[in-house]
Image 1 (cartoon, rainbow, N blue to C red):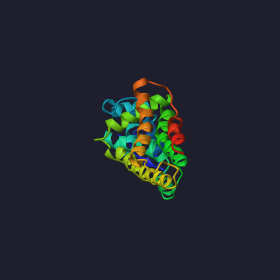
Image 2 (cartoon, rainbow, N blue to C red):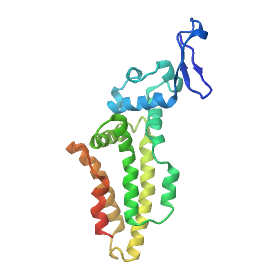
Image 3 (cartoon, rainbow, N blue to C red):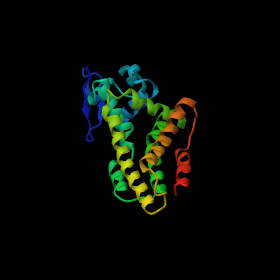
Image 4 (cartoon, one colour):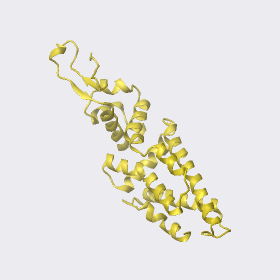
Length: 227
């Protein structure tokens, strides 16, 4: 049996079995971020359904007791892994809200949108040490395979995209009113084209097994056509 101790910063301190002399036992701090960044990497390496708690423990430098202090089931471990490994490292919602609250040019919007969507790809590239195309495949697989386990995962990206789409429609309408777009431009159709082009880059990476792509460059043709 193990004793769970926390230091003054609420970090887990692993100890040898409690039937030893605790005063002489060396402790090893393992904080929440360390544990769940490691778990995040494990979930990126295989399908959610095939990852076991033993895999997570084996791939990390911590004990099962340390892991279970924060989460005791695989769904809860996954949620914390996504929170620590992905969401906490992305640009926050306040920044998105600040952006959408002010009118933007189409070029500014496309640049921001491309950077926003590429955030999870870059984080996965760093964690998995893989190509951009492989990171895109992993990201799309996460979105599709974990809907039941973590519906808030897909809901998070859906809500962000809805906010960005509302800004895009406003930008396009402003451009049309200023005659920067033909007066008969269907802005909903144009918005769909921008979104389809964006996600097309990801889907293309999945099916062509391409290693890298440039999302902003992929959208440049649209910017040039509708300046």
